[in-house]
Length: 477
Image (cartoon, rainbow, N blue to C red; front, side):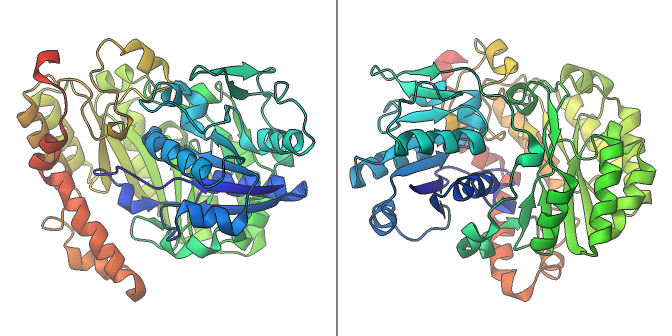
């Protein structure tokens, strides 16, 4: 079969660090490898950077199946738009939708104003297995109702589950991603001030229970690992700037040591690596960090700091404490790693909560951080618990930078303090790190692009920009 895999274009990304993180569609690359291995002809299009219209793409490739990756809940509107575009171009094309957000909360498609017209199936499990089974059934004209983890339309705008829930894949059998499938877009992928950037996965899932996170709930608290052999092979194939998307890096010390030795033995070294980990893991892993450090000239760790207080950490179900935060920062810096991270701003913050956060940042020199507003993501237990409180169901505002209900402070004051928090970071071009210092760290070919990102990031520090987006009607406040 001819299969078109689609990353939707962004329709709304006004705030946050989205411009600094434009990453390749790694999930689609894994699916492309699985489909190609089964004899299918596959093409990936990234509509964020694709200049051709969907109609032209359809005419050129003539796919029999088109699959759209709705990875983030903000992608719902673009996903529905692309599905309609595909059906207008050729109504015979089977349109499937998958990706983390719709798999966790398929109701987002069902409940949309325009309905899920044009969508023939929703995949709610891991795509490598489901897509192979779906193509096989379509190609051989077999019924789809036995394919695990597939939702099919019932005719009234809703979908019903077929078969049993899909079992998780055996990770050692998952083929490395098809990197060549997105070569046409490679130059556009950026993380922070590095570009182009390759994304990489060594682990799927997480066993922690953070209140705001949908990952552990989707994977049911399971953490699985790609084989060291496959990771090492992929590590040697990709470029010099690498973002590892694992949610729980160094989760298993024994396996992490094995993988570290395998990568070191390959002889491959990178310019920059960014991994995401937890403070309780890093605080006790100095030897492991020492093993990994030689793999890149610049090596950063992104932490979910979330809160500077025990009370805040407990309210978010982080399962950690402030002492471990400070120890992790010390260990990382001592071993030569850059420290980045994120704090969560609760709409219930008082002025004193903001002041405590500022003091913590200053005391521990945590200026390479971001700040997200506490958001109940669809598909999480927190979303269900907060339903009565939520006043906004416009998915474009679920970007972790919009208020979904009235804050404790007056709205204007909340955003003034929120923006002041951002001004205390290195992103403030008039603050600690001047704009020209950013540009000296960028390849000359990318200075124009980085300058545009920096200009846009200054919006994070403008309360008026947030107030213009605030959409909670007075009558529901």
